Amino acid sequence: MTQLDSLLTGIARKHLGIPTLETRRSDRLDFHDVAVWSVRDALQAAYDAGAQAADHRATELAAVLEHVRATLKLRHLDEASDDEVEEALSMADTAMASVPSVG
Image 1 (cartoon, rainbow, N blue to C red):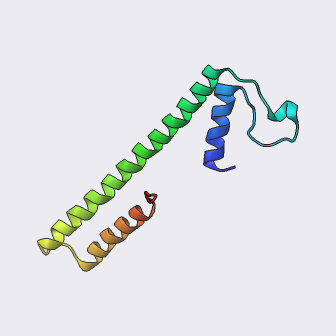
Image 2: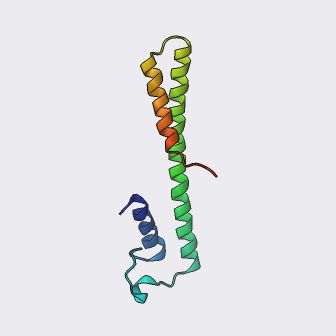
Image 3: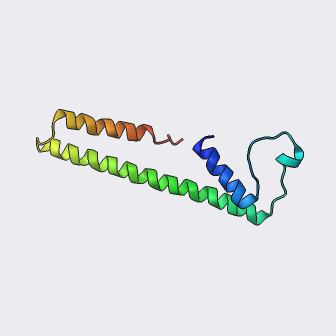
């Protein structure tokens, strides 16, 4: 089970009273009556989890960019080696590759 599957299953259990999101091929097990306020709470929990993940990722990206900026500033002052510059640029490439493209 992926981390996302675990998160969604946890939200379904907590807010909707649904024990699993796996298809069980039984109407009695696969279809549930749920109060609208429970659906709202589940959607809010999913939104909050996504916002928290985005905030965490933004913090990581900001730290990488700060490292790259500092390394390039040192390079400008001839205090950073080629290896240090390459490492900073590699970190930036890795960080940028993890950012989903928009559009």
